[in-house]
Amino acid sequence: MSFSVNLKEFKNLLQKVYPVVPVRTPYNVLFNLKFVIEDKQLKVYATDIDTSIVAKINIDSDENHKFVVNAKKIYDWTTISSNDENQNILIDVDNNNIVLTRGKSKSNFACVDVNDYPEFQTLNKDKYYEFSAEKIKYISGKVCNFSASKEAGRNRGSLEGVFFDCSKERLITVATDANKLSIISFNESFGFEGNVREIVPTKPINEVAKIVETFGYESIKFSFFNENILFFADDFELITKLVEGQYPDYEKVIPKEYSKSFSVERQELINALRITMTVADKTNNLTKFYLENNELRLHSEDINTNSKSDEFLYVDYPYEQSFIIGFNAVFLIEILSAIDTQTIKFEFVSNLGVSLIRPVYSEEDTKRNILFLLTPLRI
Image 1 (cartoon, rainbow, N blue to C red):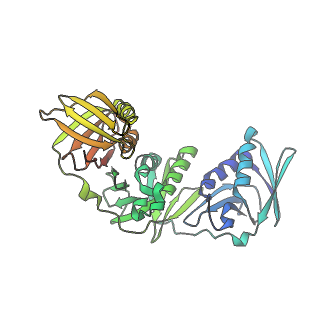
Image 2: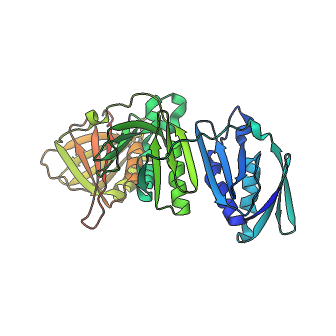
Image 3: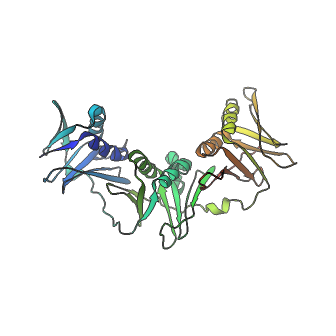
């Protein structure tokens, strides 16, 4: 069979699914994409077993056909061949080969047995909830980066995902790596009839956020099932397994009150931390905070190389008593980089208890209820 398709549409179709193709897997068939032509639609599937995605476009073809072809080869072809994205390409398919024709140019790719490719799981989408695009991107940028998923080899279990704590009145997303923690609260109704508490792996959330950002979706729907979560829009679906295990009680670690606090310009603090980090002991990247008389002195040292550094910042610290606390500067910069306000506020119970870090919003800002926690280092 043969059909034609716009090169740009074909490229965008593959761009949605290709990130799910595994880099390493014992199942060689998963290095491929599955193409299904039916009902005047071209559907493309990718899976790494835990996460599966399908995206589709309309085509002018009355025939039905399936084929499986190497993902990297065909994806690279669409990327390199995109000088004139408005042109159409002709796709000829038989049981063993696929031929892509662009003008006078032709490329031939061998197909593998379509029966070896896993079937895509079909889930009922009647009951779903809906995010605005901004919310899923916000969760990806401000919460997912604090999950321990990037340390999966350490077998961190439930900490390798984002905890969705859903109720009738709100949706809370939480992530932690046991050193730092981030929480976003959306105090609005999403239609949950009761409490839903599930752990969603971070990579699929990031992939959905990228699709939403790249292709300009205004919203994304999602549904929870016994072992899976489904994200979907009109032209794609992504299914991923939920993370098993009990998530830590994050509410217990949030202090109800604090004894000291100060506010500071976010970028000035990042710049100062980057300077003090250059001489900090690399085993813990300790930077000490000395607070007194509306001044913050950042101090780091490395006794092995007899190096030390001090930076001074003006802060809003309205207390007569001085205060000292120490942080891992790398962790702190990660938090500060995730905040998008000019000013931030630190709140302390003691120099050993967790510290709260909040963005300070102006009256013109659209306030989001976001909170970061960081465990200090002993000094």
